[in-house]
Length: 143
Image: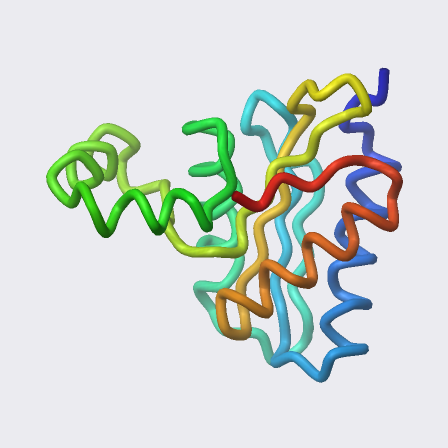
């Protein structure tokens, strides 16, 4: 069983940033959380916006908190705004319901953490995280 180690989190963060550079994305921030929602790795590229690490963390944190990728979180928020307003209040505003938060699962299907990305469009943020997770040999669950 793979756990979210510092080595794996570093590989995921570096791979996400590399995918962004390869795709010509705007400067990105990436946050890798363990299954308990704790920061393991936080990286922000030069010229990345001030709030991007917080947004990336919120995407990953929301995916962990709800148990599915932040793309599904965004879809569900559209259909149930009252519930998501309550979730935002309950989480102290830490949850960002936009694509770019990807659960990381081991081969057994257990959630071992999440990757959150912000800096470009949400779709491109998510694509960078998914590419990195797949390259690392763990399973991406984007929603």
